[in-house]
Figure 1 (cartoon, rainbow, N blue to C red):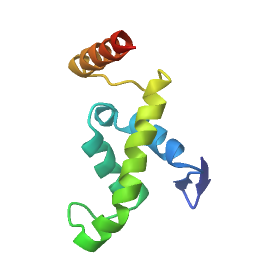
Figure 2 (cartoon, rainbow, N blue to C red; figure 1 turned 180 degrees about the vertical axis):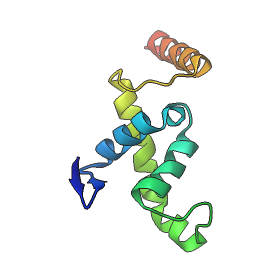
Figure 3 (cartoon, helix red, strand yellow; figure 1 turned 180 degrees about the horizontal axis):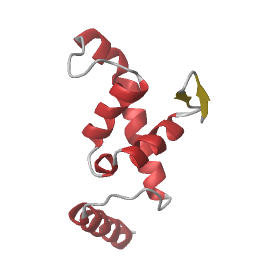
Length: 100
């Protein structure tokens, strides 16, 4: 991340998501909130008013934002702070391991 005109410039979606997860801890627990703050902070859209056509154009990128959060958290960084979510993910991981 670099600074340009006082605003951060990111090299990748992962950098964008790491920045947002650090700035908005609740986004660690909620993909929709993460995507919403990504639209507001990174894409600089005036939310909540988003034209439908613009939202459709960004739909693929929003999936990339979610996948970047998953990748970052799979590396053990910037994990959710909500204990219920941590417990649920731990149970899912155990189920997947037992299926192998």
